[in-house]
Length: 310
Image (cartoon, rainbow, N blue to C red; front, side, top):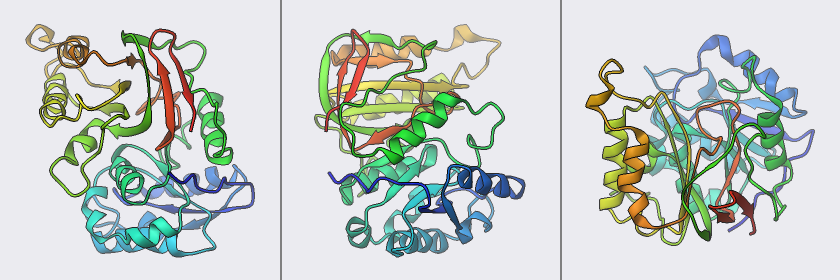
């Protein structure tokens, strides 16, 4: 798998939205946040467009993704936000052209759909990372999150890199053991939505990362069960579980009518007998880790050492 050329200060970053519309008040601060990193910024039309909850029509969003990969003056592409809509543009992307022009591509949440497609169809590494109109502009954006992001997109060639939580936040072993494989995945909802499509996630022998937000425990159960029934969980070499932000019982006043996430993981994931590490600081949270999707990593679930090896 190709690793895109590392970014450097002075490079040109395209800001796009393949998903939801950007709130107008967040656009200028988002642009400035990327400029402060030392990059020049080209603002895509989708950052200002709106078609209901989408950042313009499907055709516009797909055309802009193609345009930014095709344009040799663009060095990297940052998705300004997530939301919904990335799956809708997958049939309209020029995968042959994109594969011929790999670039640093960063974002998360709904952007998971594009990570899966680019990793599998275009054979290059992408970055599950915070985004300019969400985390970048928050007052509590922390040094760990900034440093992790910058070190991934600027030092993209490094092997031996450790994927570590902030010092005060410990990982947890769900199932002990060691595994090596290509890092794939992202948002559970989007991973599950890929099933049965031409863009279905491939998990055979891979390390699957999952996280989500605002999904009650029953829906988490349903999605993990669907992945299990589809053979996607049995196929993995190991699993990393990130943040599950606001993923509690449907009725918080009646928690006994639900199953805890821990119970769901114990019942669905533990029987796989694959190495599983929980509480990875990554997802809809701050601090948050930037993950190099498509890189080969090793996981020691007992010691919580996660290392990029290829």
